[in-house]
Image 1 (cartoon, rainbow, N blue to C red):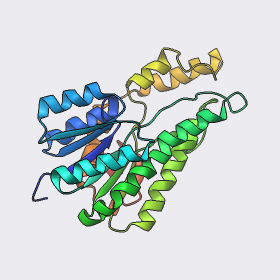
Image 2: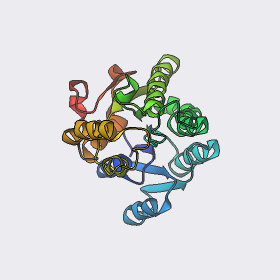
Image 3: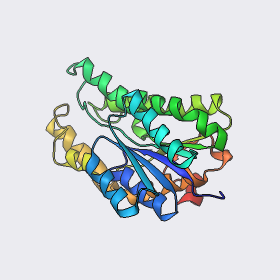
Length: 253
């Protein structure tokens, strides 16, 4: 690109989101961060300056928050080149028979509907730049492996379908999904500490912890790949969904 690309990152304050932002800034991108917590966003801006970082504080499940992020990008820098849809939650971690249906509504609003909201706001601008949409998904959406994770897995299955639908509907845009694996983030640390054990027996929780602990990766590993995809993903990857370290993403690792 002849000028620094402009990228929106949702959930950009902590964990994978912060890692995405750090890598984007290393590569001279200009970034709009969206997160419900302002403090880490202010820190990014104070370190990098308003010419590199803008931010919007708010709940991504509210359409006006996503519209504001797009407006900030376009009004500040005149373009939008990519969106990294990274915001998400894990709860409720409860069995279907025990869950409050309202909690399923909440997780779908944040993990799925918020993505659709940001896409609706950003697509007109991404069409102009042959832009990219990179989605942080999960292999939890492929099949249930542990009880009580039905809500989270269902949202990721839906997100994967959104990626495919967007690819079919928007030929000018490259949409890609990435499975980050088990990342050492505050959410995963909460699992390891037993904060999500309401829906699993002690035996199931222990088996879950034993399964994920050896597979832990640091946020910068998938985060760097997401950032590189946001800046460089080629049309051959349209609709692709892979683990961050799969061979299909070798050029972006």
